[in-house]
Length: 258
Ligand code: PGA
Image 1 (cartoon, rainbow, N blue to C red):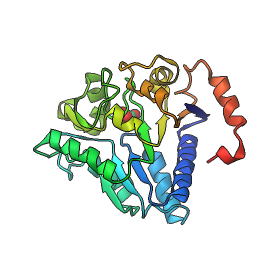
Image 2 (image 1 turned 120 degrees about the horizontal axis):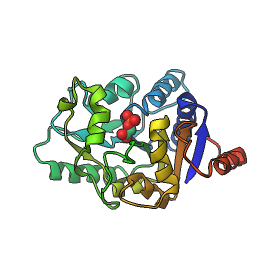
Image 3 (image 1 turned 90 degrees about the horizontal axis):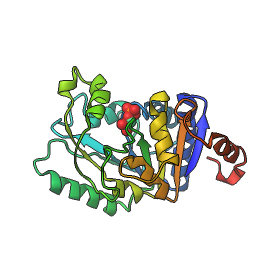
Image 4 (image 1 turned 120 degrees about the vertical axis):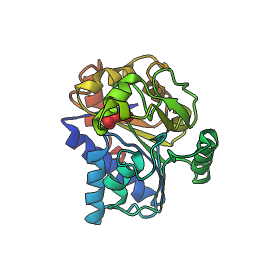
């Protein structure tokens, strides 16, 4: 796993945006896996700005979001479809975007169809991920099978509390979600994980330097051949080999840089 430590969230987002630009230059019709939450907001803002400046073209890309709350219609202001429209798709044209339908009346069938749509699109080229403070990726909470596929999950109380900021009260946060599985995520050709702030430091350390365990689903990314983690100083604070990661980055050959 490549670990890049940047000064702050803004610098993390700039580096991530450069990786997106390079991906789309190399393959304009890339299939992108996208994430929601507070983590990718600055990156999306940057992608919108780059598009407006003519520096990025997403118009041939297909996107698949990681997850969606069960029971929220696509129009719900706190659903992830609304989040994606507000942060990206209202400003930038993509060829096609997919997000699980929180109102489906057949969750297993809908999840299987979502997996099939990813396969039919050729698989995900670049998967963007945030990291939960409990070590989740997508909504794969601790205990999730490391081979799991898109399915129904019940959120932990910690995640419900963390996401309550987007709702009027914690009682309004849905308990259930549909999420790509850890196994689905591991099949992406490249993974890009972003994390900011002290609140993520433990989860970052477990992901990079802990054992591979379902108790920290992000640790499964240690098994991924092409995974980049970009963190700010606060999120990196508990990493033991910080200086080595910096050394690698400083000595990176020019052809490898985004
Ligand atoms: P956050 O959530 O970006 O809102 O911190 C990350 C996640 O839960 O995946």
